[in-house]
Amino acid sequence: MNAELSGIPTRILGLATAALAQANTHAVFMDPGSEHWPQMSILNTAHAGELFLKAIIASEHPLLIFKDLVSLDDNKSDELALQTLLTKGRTHDFEKLPQVLWATTGIRIPNLEVFERLRRARNAIQHFCAPDIRDLGALSLEFIYTIIDPLIAERFGLCAIEYHEDHSVGYDYVVKALLVRELPFSMPDDFDLTEICISDEIEGADPEYRAWIAHALDAIGKTSLLSR
Image 1 (cartoon, rainbow, N blue to C red):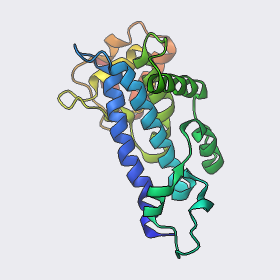
Image 2 (spheres, rainbow, N blue to C red; image 1 turned 180 degrees about the vertical axis):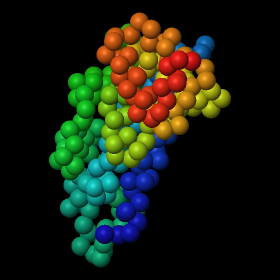
Image 3 (spheres, rainbow, N blue to C red; image 1 turned 180 degrees about the horizontal axis):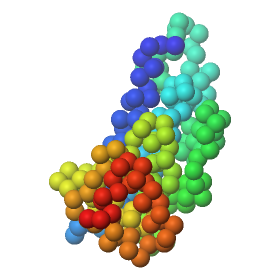
């Protein structure tokens, strides 16, 4: 295999984390003049999801993300060049990636129902108009933290909350949005919060979610955050 091709997963992963940072930001934050952000969060979330799934698949072999590979053979070159892939290669469509992921890695995508809801919302926004969904940001967060987050935590050791564009505060308000919606999320070993209080945010939460929070914090030695 051409040595250049081995860098494909890393290239994809870099773009995926950038898309995730925008998705988190557009799903959580809202300011005057940014009323379009919930719609953008859907587009960015789908983009991040597509890229992360392709990064996982490509980490098995870079060429697995491409379809119709035989059409790229010109019967002249000794090996398949990266430039040929960039100009002529076609990757699998977003809607087919769950099946490609399973076929190439044996991994079943978590929460396929949410995948389909976001895929349909993305198509509506991208090709026509916003769908009749009251809280598009909530759908984006559900996709990120029930599908993307567990996959990238397991495969790449990444935590989705760490990718956002609020560089002044950090991930506090991303975490707040997740606590309010009772969504589990991966926590880095140095997990910390300075702007919000976990116990306040989960005061009325379901006991099962409160138990999950306590267990997750205990696993990284951060139970003190519950008493702040």
